[in-house]
Length: 216
Image (cartoon, rainbow, N blue to C red; front, top):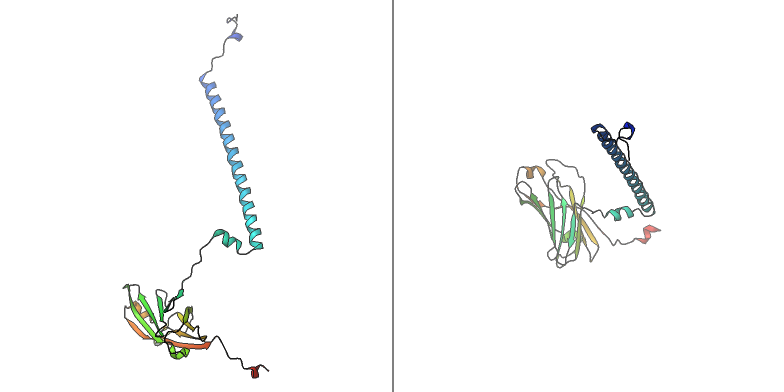
């Protein structure tokens, strides 16, 4: 039996200060463990990221298109073209604010460009031409393909011109022609309608006749 008369054998009763110090020590320890865990996570995440970048770099070095394929990035184009048996259609910018819609009727050979005015939400400019003379066809039931391009022609108030040109090719003969659009951006800004003829810029053939005498 313990003799509680001896002060050394008296039970120690935790005081408020000892409990507080104990809790503070436990909290400090918990914070230290948490900080160590976060640091380890950041370190291993960095290692994994660096390994992934190294693998991607090695793949791209072996195959330049690998990274693009891996990212599956979409390819965007400002122009489009499509053809059927009876019509060909393409788009091309005629100004900073508007596209031209080019439609070719294979049966008649009529090529027309229509431009929508953004401020009034309607087609208010039309330019046309018959491609038969330039391509040497009769324009009846022809087989054509076409696409748009860009050309920076000199512009003036007396010589308005759009930014796009249209290329048309007769798939039966290989003859092709290039047309410009006499589009007036100032008239569009003033909401004034426009109409006129597409301008023939140049023509050629994809099946040139080789002059063997000139090659000697």
